[in-house]
Amino acid sequence: MSEYQVFLQERDKVDYFLQKGYKITNVIENLSGAFVDFEKEDEKETLHIITPEGRKYFAVMLIKQQKEGA
Image 1: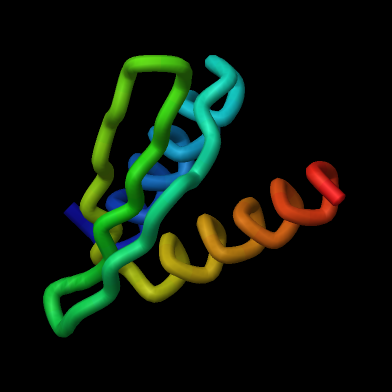
Image 2: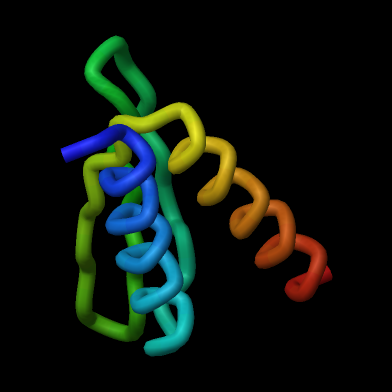
């Protein structure tokens, strides 16, 4: 699978959680990618984002989330 296809899957997963009302609560980055925690009430999900485009995308969504909360 191409890197672009992997990015599209990552983007769709991030969008899915955000549309379901989850909020990004924690990000841990390392050499193997980023682990992004999403929380909604008592539910918690973690995504492993490995593409650079995916990392940029969730960062933009996090900034948007922070601006909406301010």
